[in-house]
Length: 166
Image 1 (cartoon, rainbow, N blue to C red):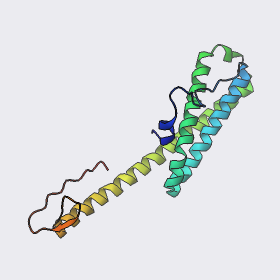
Image 2 (cartoon, helix red, strand yellow; image 1 turned 90 degrees about the vertical axis):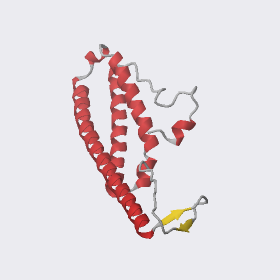
Image 3 (spheres, rainbow, N blue to C red; image 1 turned 135 degrees about the horizontal axis):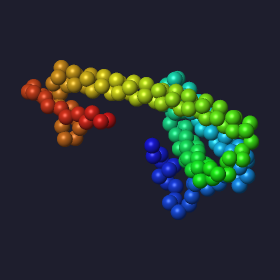
Image 4 (tube, rainbow, N blue to C red; image 1 turned 30 degrees about the horizontal axis):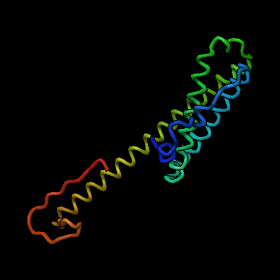
């Protein structure tokens, strides 16, 4: 999803996510990555709450933050993959903590995807209902719109073209 903020960002200036460089110390790098996962988890929790409560404005306000955090997560993951050999010396406790965090994050991501799908279906049903009502009203009222967009009387058949992708 492209947002206004992302569109206005200059191309030559790296975003905060692109400038995200993990520490050279493998244990510290893993800690930084866990902080990034936690930030993404918090965004998903807020987004899920907004979806459950039908708070559209709150949901939309989270999108820039979600995009930025997702880019940061992706950047960190790519860095860790390149440094796989270094990570063999990680503290076992930290490794377990990361595995637990990843498992929780995966569950939260699945919950987020389900909430987004429910919302998509709800919006689709609403759209279909609006389109059906508009067609029904046009058939019953036998109206037509003039070139200026004003309603005109009409006694003959009405042909309406509706863009259903709206």
